[in-house]
Length: 156
Image 1: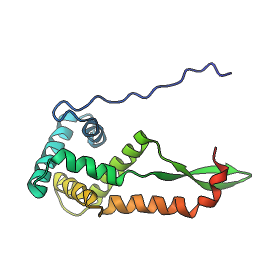
Image 2 (image 1 turned 90 degrees about the vertical axis):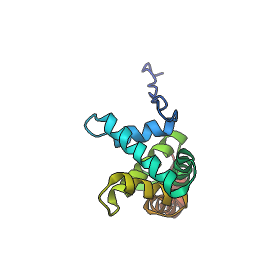
Image 3 (image 1 turned 45 degrees about the vertical axis):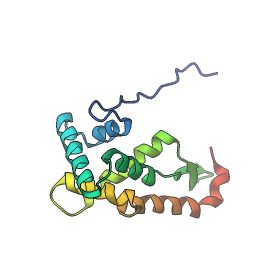
Image 4 (image 1 turned 180 degrees about the horizontal axis):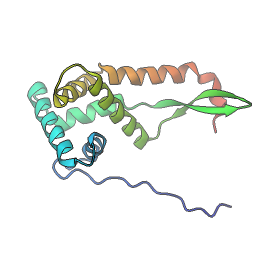
């Protein structure tokens, strides 16, 4: 029997301004060189743009976008008998949320335009409408898992 301690995840607290857990996660992902106030200002601008463009509550639009982008399955590489197989594995809730935030930010960075707040707001709007590059990444991941469904019995 192992005597190692089981490590526990340190979940960040909810955001002080919006009192939302997912907002604090995206602020932590935007964070560059420890400048949290800059990341919070970007998110504030993004939510203002979201409310102007959609005339809905910005946090609800953001949560809907994250929910739409969150994957249910992904593939993991597993080495069996000298060859590596891509094995489809279900995604646990917290990892799914992290993946969706990562994909939304990556899609926003790769968009054309000069202001990051506008690019991120447009990507969130697209994701809430089930379009955009983040949704395409989710569908691509699901297709990979579907294509490798034959290797599911190698699950570890």
